[in-house]
Image 1 (cartoon, rainbow, N blue to C red):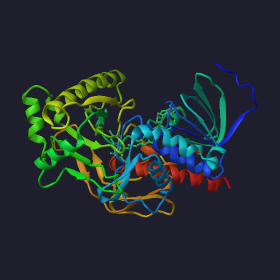
Image 2: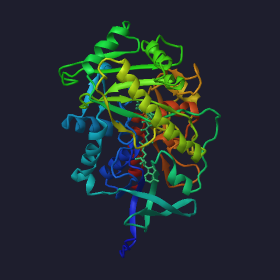
Image 3: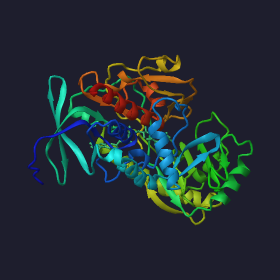
Image 4: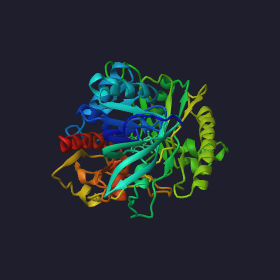
Length: 432
Ligand SMILES: Cc1cc2nc3c(=O)[nH]c(=O)nc-3n(C[C@H](O)[C@H](O)[C@H](O)COP(=O)(O)OP(=O)(O)OC[C@H]3O[C@@H](n4cnc5c(N)ncnc54)[C@H](O)[C@@H]3O)c2cc1C
């Protein structure tokens, strides 16, 4: 291990986790002249947006509050031709591979990089607490194992890695669990042919949409369609998935959730938001086995679409997510626990961090038990991002201190980015 023989390393803010919310936070801290360290265990940034292959950003009307970073992401992605604006004005369709370069680019801007250090392939190993504050963390990488001091710490790991080490409690208010997914991408798909097919089977366009626009999609045809084993909608692809089961290409469980999207600048590539994985987040052995089960399901789905869907005849598996798609795996006890009632009744707060309207969205493992409940515009208070137990710790993104139902709405990428931005600005205000 490299021995840094230098004077005490001290930052204003240390952010653990360079994913969706962590990058937004790092950008805003550095922009506000805070000496910032961003620590990421992968060798690239983006978290679920890159390693998890989670595309596209779900639409949510948080245009007016803490959306500067999101806008920056859209504008920078345009420069790389890595973004399209889909039907309904959703400008959050990004290319997950190019995003790795784009996040680097955004955080390398002069005014940002002068205040920001980034450590890749680095994990947090130990936390030293003093008087209800984190005094320092010990980081762990191939090159580094030293204490890093900071005035404020942000846990943006999605799994609460820093909060666990700091002894924080997690909210435990539900027996229900969100289903996980292992997303993947198929390449070499004739997307024009597939679009013609889905348009011909989903005549009322209830589930399926295709979209081409000179400016917004660079005149390329984009699409989305879905099918689940729930009976709440007339799923146009249902009969095909049922046939796939009858012919032994698919298992019954593969019908649980099937969703595909075209990818910005991903010519011939199709992103799959499936297969679902049973939630064994509390049992590492079962959880690990589920990943093997999921990869088998990916292979079945691949064989199925090749056999059943025009356009997929020559498809190849081009990418299986390196990060498992876990929707919820720990919400940290915060100063204010945000509830479904706050969300439904559109409660307002003194220090709101976002203004959004994404639905309550629960993926159930049981037929007809999934929930997609529309909401009006709601706010989230900053106190739901501040640890109730450690005074200089913020917990953002998927870790938001909200009840299970409210979390299912707040967890989408745009809201996670707003949380990161809001915390960056908030810390800058306290320190100034
Ligand atoms: C299957 C699935 C589908 C989804 N679909 C959509 C969708 O279509 N649209 C949408 O808007 N949202 C969607 N979401 C929600 C959204 O993608 C996530 O909730 C959001 O990206 C979470 O952001 P985050 O910053 O909390 O976590 P992440 O983006 O996961 O970032 C966490 C980062 O922390 C790093 N990390 C973890 N542990 C450590 C450690 N110990 N040390 C250092 N670094 C660490 C990780 O490597 C990662 O980079 C989906 C989520 C899932 C799981």
